[in-house]
Length: 197
Image (cartoon, rainbow, N blue to C red):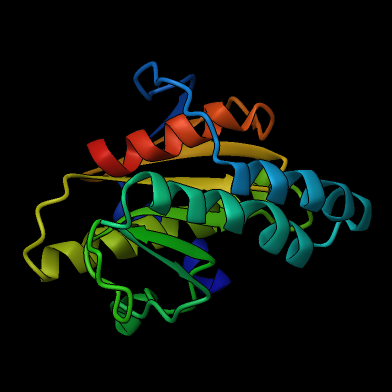
């Protein structure tokens, strides 16, 4: 979403709850050989270069593809898609990553989890953008009569993940940063969010 909208996130919210973990205790999920190999090869160059693009392509994307695989491809995964919901409200722009509860891979349907890559590896900088995209997903679902009461989000540098939850007009932010290793924990959390949100 455009940074302009990030400044207006408060307009859509009645409360922001900041603090600890809001997710249920989730079970770690063993990664496939594919993900183990992808991270084994991808983490060193992504960390060495430090670029957002490398973190996105070599760490975040393989993890989200793995989530789709774990969920038997009954969900869809989008990267860099236009997600204009209501231009007049500032809900327009391109989402970094989005997981939808629909298996439809051509068009976005039923967005449930939004993942935003942090700018310059500072997770705090991505919170406004993530909240904006979560609000857009909520409005999209409402307009299309898709009953998903909770939208989850994550801001990730690739090596660290922070989670958000949007229910109605209440945004909860977990200020714990969860490391990518062991990836089993992150997989468990992401899969739970898609299933339970």
